[in-house]
Image (cartoon, rainbow, N blue to C red; front, top):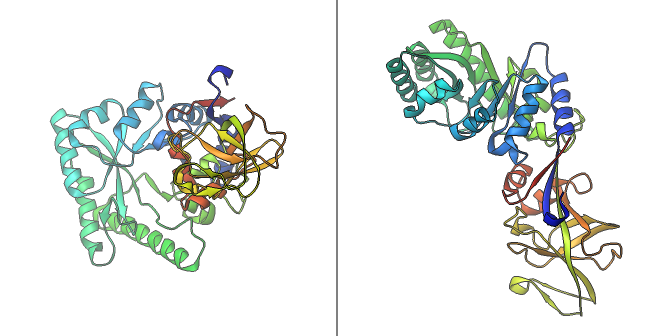
Length: 376
């Protein structure tokens, strides 16, 4: 990190991403493909560096949320298959085909729009059919009374001209939850997914080349659901394996610096809202990080950061560009000292639990003004 720019930065370990890819891959059954989820700028880690690493390492597919994310990868020289998980307006069908991007189809009406656009061009669009088995988001309705109609709509969609229905997938809602009710729900989603696929084949003769449903939680907890391909997202970046079964390594370290140190007498109010008051003479450090960098305001007075010699409790309301931490018990901490918000010394789960959220949100919230420093 250039000392002249040294304020707050995120260190990204590419060797750890490679390690995680290889560890996950080694856990899969023979022949199972690997789709790396790199949406949301690879969960804040940098979509292009991560995609290039996965391509070089031998991954089979990438997934993004939208067309802009897919085009960023293509313009960056990534040539491997890319699946868009979200909606793309049918007006961009030619762009999808020109850049060899696979599009999710989540309803018969959308399939018809893509089909009409592709046939007008005299070309074929590769698609993956999305089934809604219980996430209640995108996908063909197929649960309960919708089963027969869902099967028929999938068959009709796959028969449309100009479409190549390469794959079919669904998304689990609670595969990362360990309670019995969540396990039952996940297994019910999986059974419904398989039932629809089997019925589509028996009734319509449609055989999908790629069936995938295992997200990060399922890769860890339900390895029997791997099918033809898995879709690890957060797992790839070193989180979500609380059992330690796969031996994954965190890949981002969010670091700031101590910009100022001041001494306050007892009874001094700290920051906006006067939500913290010193109880003793306090050696207070001002840190060069705030909610505009991705440190959630919700963790104010509820977390600690790793600094030279130990952990510094955060004090007062977190501001846009800075926050305060109590350095009274940390004499080695000086102006310019590095402070780890999360990483190898400070587990991200402590911060996400304090914020009442999940690691996904913290990783994706690290803002664009925070430089990414790639560790080779």
